[in-house]
Length: 188
Image (tube, rainbow, N blue to C red; front, side):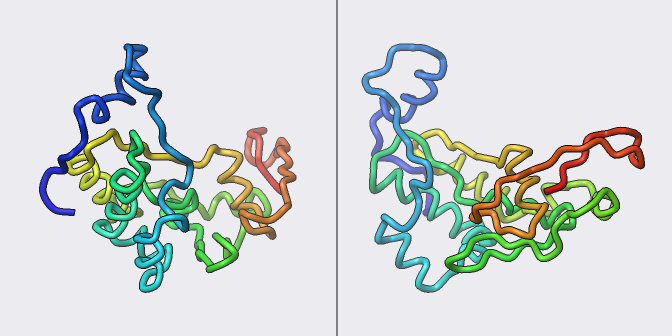
C-alpha cells in the first residue's frame, strides 16, 4: 500500500459513517466478520510465507491484509486484522498462535494469586506494530476502519485454560474471593 487510496465513490467512502449517523445512504453498508482470510487468494499467498503472528507483528503486512477485502470485495469498512489475544502479552500472558489450533495460553490464570502476576497494559509497548497498522489504515483506507476487541469474558475465558480459545470448554465461574477484598474473580 502506497500513497492515499482512491477509486471508491464518495458514497462508499462515507456510507458506513452516514448510516451510523442515521442519515440516508444509497445502500446498506456491509462488512464481514473475518473478511480478511482464507477466502481471499491474496491472503492465502501471504500465508504461504507468513504466520498469523508474523502478519499481526508487521504493520505493513497487517495493513495490507486488512485492506484486501476492501479492494477485492467492495466492503464498506476495513477491519483491522488481529487476534483477540494479541494484547495479552502486554499484561504478561504468553500466547502462542498455533496453526490449525488457534491461540494457546502457556500458563493460564487458575487462581487469585495468578492475577498478581499480571501487569498494567501499555499499548505503545505491547502492540506497536498493530498501532502502526491502524495508522497506515487510517491514512490509506478509502473506507472507515473498524477495530475489534474481545469482550471481557471472552478474553478471560481464553486466559483461564486448560482449553484453547476454540475448544468446546465454555464454563466460566465467577466467585468472590475474600483474599482480594471481595472482588469477583473469574476462574474456569
